Image: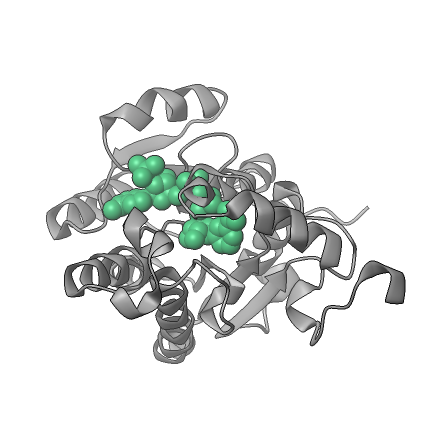
Length: 264
Ligand code: NAP
């Protein structure tokens, strides 16, 4: 069997809210392979959950709201102090105000735009910029995106535009960091039932349709995001890939037309 041993490697995982979080799905195979991990969380209310989830890991837990530069600086200072270096950065967080999922995109307000872009797109730049000096032996950055970045998915609205900015940022960051052997990629996941997904109006119906209409005729499992996220991070499995957005969505993104089941 082909095994990957990440003993001695270190990673920072941002965006674990609970056991359903895509960040947690990616953290688990990293930890199982022997990597030592730090986790950042937004606000004290999430700390007990993280403590419970990571009870069997020697994990560093640090609060960080990505809109706050001081908290970002403190997070990376804590990572530097504990690990002295960094191999992997998992950026799995996003936010847009509830109203933006409920009202037409046409009604997007400036404050909402700023906030969604800041948390969902700029935070990748802010974190990668701070991670890069710690990636002295090369490294790998992974963010999470969604099809609404390049197609209209009803209700995603501002979040779709923020994901488009995120995917473009992946390419520019990958270009800047290529000479340093730091790879930057996005995993575009099919719908998964997480806390963040709950804020999207009509998510339940869309989840069902994505499952029925995808090539595999099912929804993805979060473990599938975890294992492929792992592959995108680890040089042994994806060393030649950077600046890319890769889909783990049961083939949904590549279908050009949906037809009724009885005509398939
Ligand atoms: P999740 O478990 O709710 O994770 C989202 C995380 O973002 C939470 O930990 C949340 O913390 C954090 N966050 C929000 N604002 C933040 C801020 N200002 N500073 C720091 N952290 C902040 O949901 P998820 O679905 O796993 O989301 C992870 C990523 O996957 C997101 O980028 C999402 O867009 C993407 N994605 C999700 C799906 C899906 O269907 N679930 C599909 C494709 C892509 P709080 O809980 O404290 O707000």
